[in-house]
Image (tube, rainbow, N blue to C red; front, side, top):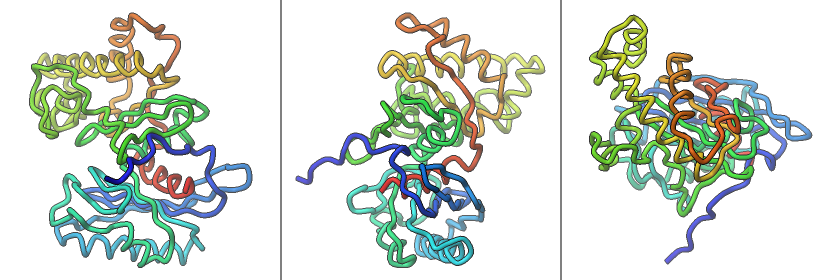
Length: 315
């Protein structure tokens, strides 16, 4: 039996100077970012880009495209000191192989992503879950900068998350801790894509919000609620209720300094955050709502890929 991976890893306070490439592998887009870390640990994003994943062409094509992107950016903005790649789903952190990635067709299980990127780019490569990368970025350069303990949620096609505790990003055995989207908030609730029932993701993922409100998108669901549509308003109220339950549990367990919420659903702004904060304050019994903030993410759609670059700089 191999030993478990560490439960946490150094956060950005230990990042190394140099230039670091972040790659974010998504079902629709591959994002890239080049991060420059200067003396004193000051990090600055000097380049970002996005291109279609073309996932329908299979893993071999996607990996080759990642290598080509890395080579282009090394030539244009390098020399690069290392590469971090953020992936959705599950991977073997010790072997650097993919186990499961949602929204990416093809035979991804067992693909040795880390070794292939390292060979193609001739640089050290580190792998991290995309939601954990988001957490690292927002805690280092974003909405939770200077906070020691952070809970982060990404509300998009699914609901991802991550925890930073006392300045260290939490991974748990084999890198699988921090699945905040799969906290059970209603045991009698709808089924979730993870196979469970009543997870936060089953209520707060963008497609679930849209379907529950009878609207094409979550954005339109929030707009309809604001315009007085009863079904949409009830949907948003339910989302805030269930999300508040999840946040209260996290607050009671780890007492974060800040709760960061990002992803496409967070673009609703006050239509989400005002009722959410009120619901959390109403439900809290063991903590003072004034002891922490619930805030929108600051780095926008680039948080995950910036976090992947930061992760490379931590190794």
